[in-house]
Image 1 (cartoon, rainbow, N blue to C red):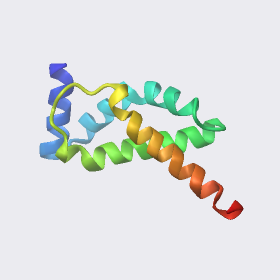
Image 2: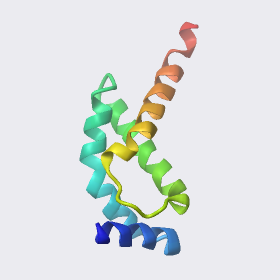
Image 3: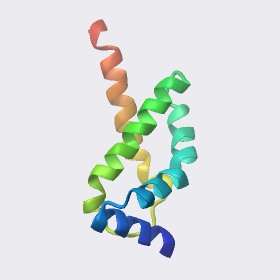
Length: 93
């Protein structure tokens, strides 16, 4: 937990790429697994997972350093999955 807090602070204060990479590696499999269950295939799940981490890193400056969990990513995952669904099905409307 202290290591995670340190990684978050390093990204927030210094834009530390190694710390950002460590956060992504720590949560990638769990987030991908969650997203994969909600998408039609691996390619779509990979794209959504990437978008979730882009969102995390863009908004990390506003994050209060408390323990991250895959659970805390679920709203972002669902938002991305839904947005992809709408994009994919826009021609059907």
